[in-house]
Amino acid sequence: MKLGDAIWGALLLVLAGSLLWYVQGFPKMPGQHVGPAVLPGTIAVGLGVCGALLVVRGLRARAAASMRWVEWPVWIGSRPHVLALAALVGVNVFYLLAVQPLGFVLTGTAYLFVLMWALRVRPARALALAVVMTLVIHYGFYKLLKVPLPWGVLQPIAW
Image (cartoon, rainbow, N blue to C red; front, top):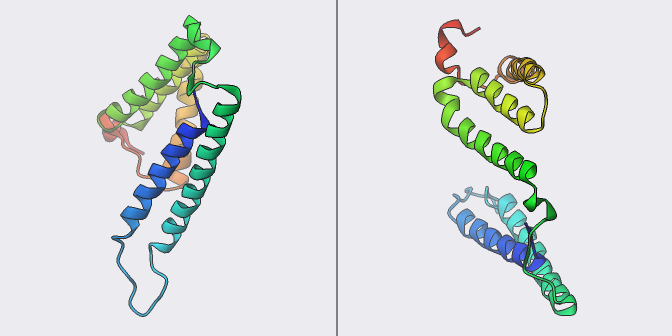
């Protein structure tokens, strides 16, 4: 689905306004003119300017070419593409719900396997790649970057 520039601009304006409102509650630093709200506030102003420009551009383009607000992509009628999208959304929901009880290694392996299956990789190859890639990712984040990934049911054999 393709949203018009005016819609994206309006969403950016809402985000910018929300961010500006939120950073007003940040504490002031005594004796300083610059506090913790300056950087996010500056980013919010930039987002607001970009959002306003997108709204103007979108409204001009819509008036000139009688464009639609929302356009559906061509692939929406293709069953394999829709199933791949459903698999993508499904594995992300699965990851959010299962990573704590099952652990990163099992969840990541299932995640990658399903994505490769949706992309029509042969099951044996997909499983082998999913296991190897998950272990490499786990090593990189857990050992090298010291990110505390959950072990879940594999806690008794954690390394």
